Length: 310
Image 1 (tube, rainbow, N blue to C red):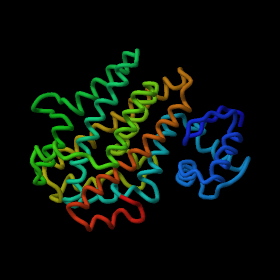
Image 2 (cartoon, one colour; image 1 turned 60 degrees about the horizontal axis):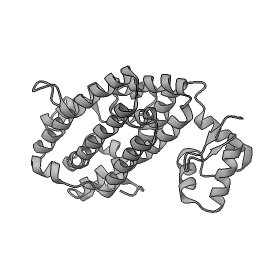
Image 3 (cartoon, one colour; image 1 turned 135 degrees about the vertical axis):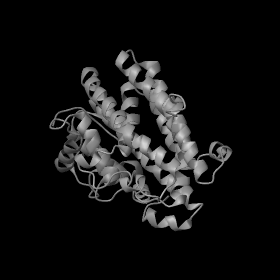
């Protein structure tokens, strides 16, 4: 284990995973919250020492057997669709009206940031295939292709209207603090990181609505597909969810294939991994903000949060 190892909490570089494990042990000994939380979330709640922790860290980051694209998918699925699915994913299986309202009011801010984040990629890349992919994604998400194919952003607003929200309310409601923090994280990634890291940070998030995640080990999908067939939700909500259900397979898989290919070319595999993990942390908090917003309309949603703070 002589590979260069970068700390996923503070991004300091070490000459080996043994060195990184020593760093984590030292930070844990002085009770540094960011390092302890990262270890608890991703590796072990036992602080560990030396070679044992080094081996665990190496195994966590190793892409040799699967490749980077599959590694990203596996880590994402473990986080949001694993043995303990994310609370918002559980709430969305058969969603109450308040869950969907929380979704609308927070997600419109995410979609605005989505355009800014992909624009950072466009501004920095010199690869024509990447430009084409990101332009298509921006148009699909925010501009649309006329009356027959409205943007996801417009479909989201119509979903809100079908739930009793005015367009002015949807567009005029400020984001909750957790959403603001997540947006700041994604904006900083776009501004400060390599464009390939930004691609990985953003397009990995589209795995959330990828209907094929069960093929890769997910216990459940983003929502129970039956809600698209019955009368549990409004037609406008079906239209919004169905669009992502259809589009996000390609919108996640194709960019992640590009990320894997270019990460090898540029020698950025580890950098992509670290940035992806930071984006996942932000996304986790942002999904909790959707639930928090929903609780303002129905306090019973607190049951979904379990032991996790909204």
